[in-house]
Amino acid sequence: MSAIFKFIFERLTDPLGLPINPIYEYLILLIINEIAYRIAYAKVGDMYHGGWISGTLSGSFFHWVIRAFWFVIIWLITYGAIQGYYFVTANWQIILMIAVSVVGTAMLCVLAVAAMRFVKKHRAVNGNA
Image 1 (cartoon, rainbow, N blue to C red):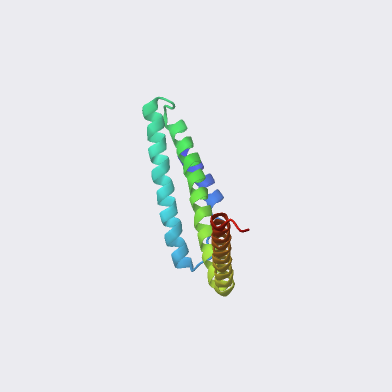
Image 2: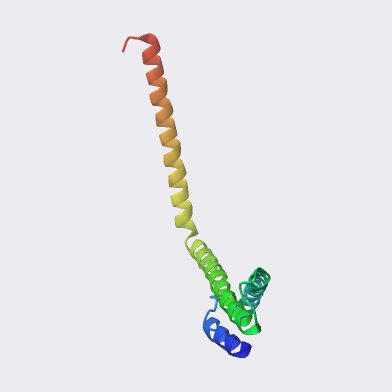
């Protein structure tokens, strides 16, 4: 029965590639798969020790379900990070201009608030306003 769960897992995760060099893709997917395996192994072990499940069929089922879930979650995070890297490298000048504009605007706002507080303080002290 475990072979059936493995087959289903492989069919579900097979199209989940990464938009990078195939060698790096296989290495990263191998690492993701190993992390998902270790998480699933630990969770199913906790389920056995907690008395929630018993038998190999239920253990195998929950192992593959948990493993597939964490594989997809970690893959999504990795895919998003790679796409974010590609976006930043393709648009670094625009991002830099926006960042400088935001910092400049924040500095002007701080300067304006400080000037208004300075004027308000001196009006209250002098009393001639």
